[in-house]
Image (cartoon, rainbow, N blue to C red):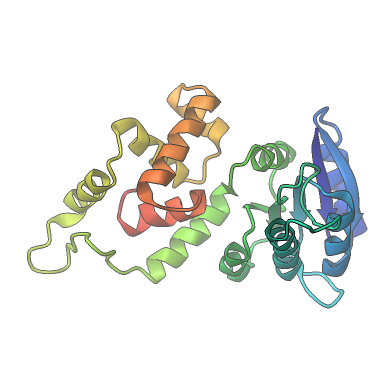
Length: 251
């Protein structure tokens, strides 16, 4: 059973999310909070596996700071072998996956939230099934960028774009062009053709289930490919893989 906490200062929004999520047999909402401070207390008390977190809320600090404090409490507890109850992790002691629910125009929060350690982003305008899929993906250990949020990441990367170390720069004398630079990046990483295909879909913000459907593979197989891609690229998560792909023209 996936244990979910809902954090939003609007009761009507929380009620809507609860109705959507509890319509699924494998999801239970273990609590709600209306502020960042309440979210920290709720996480410590109920140990949810997934937290759906709003950004702008009253109560002294916002959803990003609440995420930072929740995840820090788990890290502190894990570092202290004698720590007692009170860690904000899931029922098995692991850190909760935090899904930031945001709206258009709030892309400025994106990179601060990434630094705080959140696991995914979804627009509040997303369909009900997308919210359900996002919760399940995070509960399974995946990171998630919705397509619209992925575009914000790509736009930010493009605005700040520099030629990565070791990549050919088509704008300089001797540059071999974007196609060759992309191939060289793939070759240095040691990606197989299948892994290149998986990376391209990752860069579009696709979930494992969506990648599996697109490539006619099982989800377990896709998860293995994703793990191999992250390891070969030397990145921490799917979000960093998106940045890797777009800074090297590999998507």
